[in-house]
Length: 591
Image 1 (tube, rainbow, N blue to C red):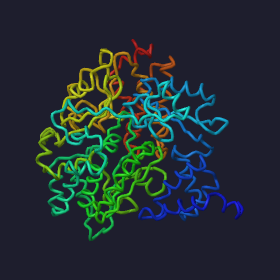
Image 2: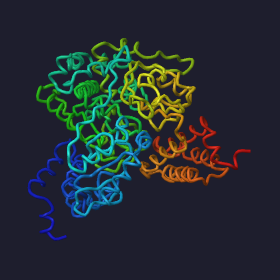
Image 3: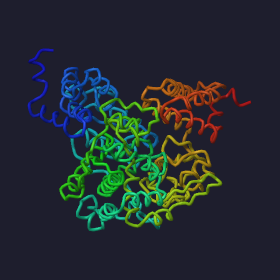
Image 4: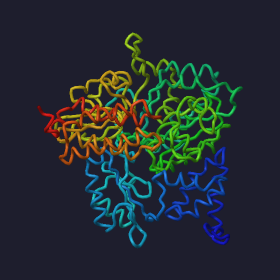
């Protein structure tokens, strides 16, 4: 490439904008992903010349930039449309008619998925879950959620007419105790003045006056567990961070990369109450003596990113952040970033390949420094724990029972409810509330039909039968019936649903989202998906259930992260709880 070509890739203003990303975060390479996003927006793709320019700017190899650019779905090698439409075909959206919406787009635009119209105006694609199961079948334009992909909404999008910002249903009546959603009836809760008028940032002031050991003790006493899926005790996690004397630089990262199909609570919590999240982040930073706090938000949450950034700016201008620097970073469309180590790799300007622990992030995390990673809901709980005390929070939840290996779970849970219910939305209930009660709060089964199946914690959790809906919604009770609380993404399936189709949708998602690092996951997920496809086409054979079982067993424990384990666990769950769904498709197995 000639020197002249290098000088004309970007305008002077664009070059300055890209250069800012080398100083925005504590380490220059951390700005690579955001710089690549800007290039994608300007050029509608990332070209070889762009990769070379970015490699020079961030002092890395072009091959490194190319690996990142081709890993994340947000970036394309050939030009996308100026308006890039995406229709979700995750489980809830597929059940609501995502396939018909995609067929409609193909017919209207006269181009296939991934192709761009001749005038360069539009391209469209099927997307994995975009965190909007309550809007099913959801669609977006340039990473901004538009709402359901109805004919009217698609027409408006193609005409360039703005649609009103979709509003999630937030239940404000069913629960007797609400913590995170208690003020959600306030229309301006996202603004600093309103949040402070309701007592916002008082807990932060209180925390800063407490001894660090006392603050940590209150969080441990609260029995707060990680609400992003793992359920690890938050106070215990903080306690594994090395002393400041041994590692003075440390970070807190908010995991806002909510990509699990069925989960959309963090989307709503962040857009409705961003200051609640920021206050929690600042409390966590104070608790471990961190001077940097990061909010890593999924790329598809463009509208939410603007709301959160505006709240960060308000907090900084009001002097609330103190000596802590809060920075927002957007992801680029990879589900695997929901795993803490893959998220940290992404923040370091790399492909989202999970790390093999130990060491764990609290010891060796972001840029090799001790890092606490908590999700939006977990951090948002902290102001309430500090304000009201750990004992108060613990009493809201369920007690432990050491003899039964039942660990306590404090506080409330915010549940995303979607699928075949009358009122999809988010519902906050005390830990241990029966699943049945949450489904009833969501209006019960749509159309008065019978319940067939419930996925309790997002599609990575095994399904439950209709007979199991009395199970308390807490981490250990769900383990007792062979599933998990996960991130609280409840998907309801009625009596008309084909559960092999549901299992195939989930396995197809896992195949698409496997990072490819571990051979058992990369290959096993593909095999599982192909077997389910064959069964759906009517080509099932007697050994299919046995083979699905064996494939899952041969992946479990042989991979770095939980995605591979999920491949076998979910399909085995469907076969165990609903064997007749499979046997009726396998004639030779009916003896």
